[in-house]
Image (spheres, rainbow, N blue to C red):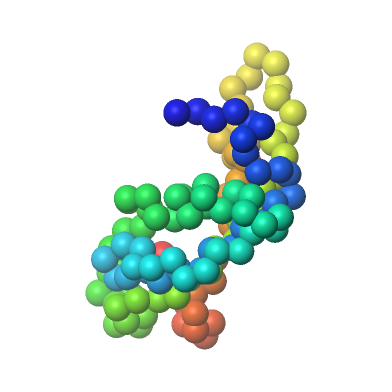
Length: 114
């Protein structure tokens, strides 16, 4: 179902979701959700993280380095889409939630490319 733009969070909304990601690619638990302004966009961001197939199972090397679970923090920034260009298909990056979501793996000294 496509929802109207009026039902979506306003431009400038920032949502941060902290969750545990297990080595099988499953979200084990949502630990914290912060939204500014309060509540706006949170359900969309949690849904994007928890829907089936969002994350792949980890390689054996990743499991050795990261263990069975890792705490992840994703921050989503709702931004305005560029103006539509007549007679042109929209660019793939003209989404309301930008593809520049910040992702951090804790502890910060461990780096893995997921």
